[in-house]
Length: 133
Image (cartoon, rainbow, N blue to C red; front, side, top):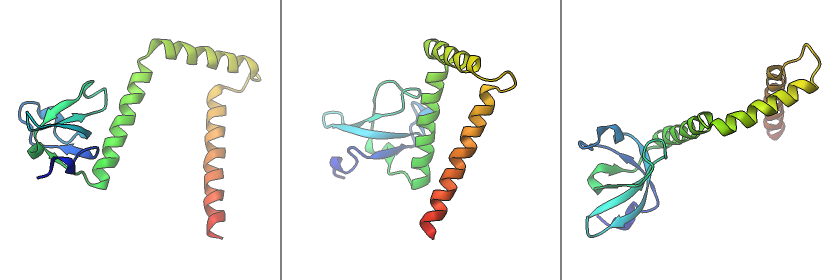
Protein backbone atom coordinates (compact mmCIF):
# COMPACT_ATOMS: atom_id res chain seq x y z
CA UNK A 1 0.00 0.00 0.00
CA UNK A 2 0.97 3.64 -0.42
CA UNK A 3 2.99 4.88 2.60
CA UNK A 4 1.38 8.31 2.26
CA UNK A 5 -2.07 6.82 2.94
CA UNK A 6 -1.53 6.87 6.73
CA UNK A 7 0.69 9.95 7.08
CA UNK A 8 -0.61 12.63 9.45
CA UNK A 9 -3.66 10.50 10.25
CA UNK A 10 -4.82 9.01 13.50
CA UNK A 11 -4.03 5.31 13.67
CA UNK A 12 -4.97 2.49 15.99
CA UNK A 13 -2.14 0.18 17.00
CA UNK A 14 -2.88 -3.55 16.99
CA UNK A 15 -1.16 -6.95 17.00
CA UNK A 16 2.13 -5.71 18.45
CA UNK A 17 3.69 -8.68 20.24
CA UNK A 18 6.92 -6.98 21.39
CA UNK A 19 4.99 -4.27 23.30
CA UNK A 20 1.44 -5.54 23.81
CA UNK A 21 0.64 -2.58 26.10
CA UNK A 22 0.55 -0.45 22.92
CA UNK A 23 -2.26 -2.49 21.36
CA UNK A 24 -5.52 -0.53 20.99
CA UNK A 25 -3.76 2.79 21.64
CA UNK A 26 -4.46 5.70 19.29
CA UNK A 27 -1.62 7.76 17.85
CA UNK A 28 -0.69 9.82 14.79
CA UNK A 29 1.48 8.48 11.96
CA UNK A 30 3.99 11.34 11.78
CA UNK A 31 6.35 10.06 9.09
CA UNK A 32 7.42 7.02 7.11
CA UNK A 33 10.89 5.50 7.29
CA UNK A 34 11.38 3.85 3.86
CA UNK A 35 14.69 2.23 4.82
CA UNK A 36 12.97 0.41 7.72
CA UNK A 37 9.52 0.15 6.09
CA UNK A 38 7.93 1.56 9.24
CA UNK A 39 5.83 4.52 10.34
CA UNK A 40 6.90 6.76 13.19
CA UNK A 41 3.80 6.97 15.38
CA UNK A 42 3.51 9.56 18.12
CA UNK A 43 1.42 8.72 21.16
CA UNK A 44 0.33 10.81 24.15
CA UNK A 45 3.39 11.57 26.33
CA UNK A 46 2.12 9.53 29.28
CA UNK A 47 2.06 6.44 27.03
CA UNK A 48 5.31 7.06 25.15
CA UNK A 49 7.35 10.25 25.30
CA UNK A 50 9.00 9.58 21.94
CA UNK A 51 7.58 8.27 18.62
CA UNK A 52 7.55 4.53 18.01
CA UNK A 53 8.44 2.84 14.70
CA UNK A 54 5.71 0.41 13.65
CA UNK A 55 4.93 -1.66 10.54
CA UNK A 56 1.87 -0.78 8.47
CA UNK A 57 0.47 -4.23 9.35
CA UNK A 58 0.22 -3.06 12.98
CA UNK A 59 -1.75 0.09 12.13
CA UNK A 60 -5.38 0.67 11.21
CA UNK A 61 -7.64 3.69 10.80
CA UNK A 62 -9.66 3.93 14.03
CA UNK A 63 -13.43 4.25 14.20
CA UNK A 64 -15.04 7.44 15.51
CA UNK A 65 -15.51 5.88 18.96
CA UNK A 66 -11.90 4.69 19.04
CA UNK A 67 -10.75 8.21 18.14
CA UNK A 68 -12.90 9.62 20.94
CA UNK A 69 -11.46 7.09 23.38
CA UNK A 70 -7.96 8.03 22.22
CA UNK A 71 -8.70 11.73 22.77
CA UNK A 72 -10.09 10.97 26.24
CA UNK A 73 -6.93 8.99 27.02
CA UNK A 74 -4.82 11.93 25.87
CA UNK A 75 -6.79 14.39 28.03
CA UNK A 76 -6.52 12.03 31.01
CA UNK A 77 -2.76 11.90 30.52
CA UNK A 78 -2.57 15.70 30.48
CA UNK A 79 -4.67 15.81 33.65
CA UNK A 80 -2.33 13.35 35.37
CA UNK A 81 0.69 15.39 34.28
CA UNK A 82 -0.83 18.57 35.68
CA UNK A 83 -2.09 16.82 38.82
CA UNK A 84 1.38 15.53 39.65
CA UNK A 85 3.09 18.88 38.99
CA UNK A 86 4.00 20.19 42.45
CA UNK A 87 4.59 23.76 41.21
CA UNK A 88 1.16 23.98 39.62
CA UNK A 89 -0.48 22.47 42.68
CA UNK A 90 1.20 25.12 44.85
CA UNK A 91 -0.07 27.90 42.53
CA UNK A 92 -3.61 26.49 42.61
CA UNK A 93 -3.47 26.14 46.39
CA UNK A 94 -2.43 29.80 46.74
CA UNK A 95 -5.23 30.84 44.37
CA UNK A 96 -7.84 28.90 46.33
CA UNK A 97 -6.56 30.38 49.59
CA UNK A 98 -6.76 33.89 48.14
CA UNK A 99 -10.32 33.35 46.89
CA UNK A 100 -11.38 31.80 50.21
CA UNK A 101 -10.09 34.82 52.11
CA UNK A 102 -12.41 37.06 50.04
CA UNK A 103 -15.55 34.96 50.64
CA UNK A 104 -18.09 35.28 53.46
CA UNK A 105 -17.45 32.83 56.35
CA UNK A 106 -20.08 30.23 55.36
CA UNK A 107 -19.22 30.11 51.63
CA UNK A 108 -16.55 27.75 50.32
CA UNK A 109 -14.73 27.66 46.99
CA UNK A 110 -16.53 24.38 46.21
CA UNK A 111 -19.87 26.25 46.41
CA UNK A 112 -18.61 28.78 43.84
CA UNK A 113 -17.44 26.01 41.51
CA UNK A 114 -20.77 24.19 41.71
CA UNK A 115 -22.64 27.46 41.13
CA UNK A 116 -20.47 28.29 38.12
CA UNK A 117 -21.06 24.81 36.64
CA UNK A 118 -24.82 25.13 37.12
CA UNK A 119 -24.77 28.55 35.42
CA UNK A 120 -22.64 27.18 32.57
CA UNK A 121 -24.93 24.19 32.02
CA UNK A 122 -27.98 26.47 32.17
CA UNK A 123 -26.42 28.78 29.61
CA UNK A 124 -25.59 25.87 27.32
CA UNK A 125 -29.14 24.56 27.68
CA UNK A 126 -30.75 27.91 26.86
CA UNK A 127 -28.42 28.61 23.95
CA UNK A 128 -29.22 25.18 22.56
CA UNK A 129 -32.93 25.73 23.16
CA UNK A 130 -32.88 29.15 21.51
CA UNK A 131 -31.25 27.73 18.37
CA UNK A 132 -34.20 25.32 17.92
CA UNK A 133 -36.82 28.08 18.18
